[in-house]
Image (cartoon, rainbow, N blue to C red; front, side, top):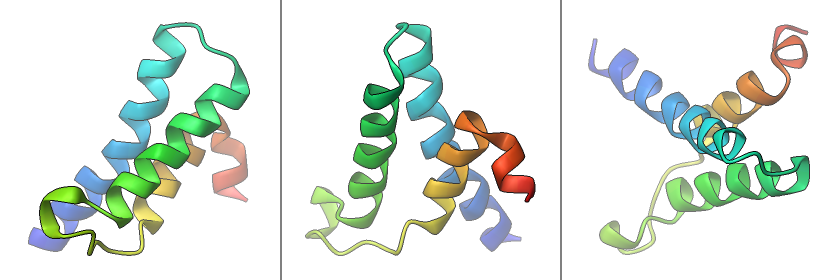
Length: 73
């Protein structure tokens, strides 16, 4: 059960980063930059001494919002 909650939160990080960028109307390269920043923040968190996890779920969240069809394939 805890693993499912962690997965949803990690996917949510990527989703929220892109949705906030889209709300401000930024272009596609900046959205990809926001997704990359979310990935870096997940993989190297400052508050844990730059030791994070792989960030696969965060990338899934980014791809889910930017191109959901790609995720299905």
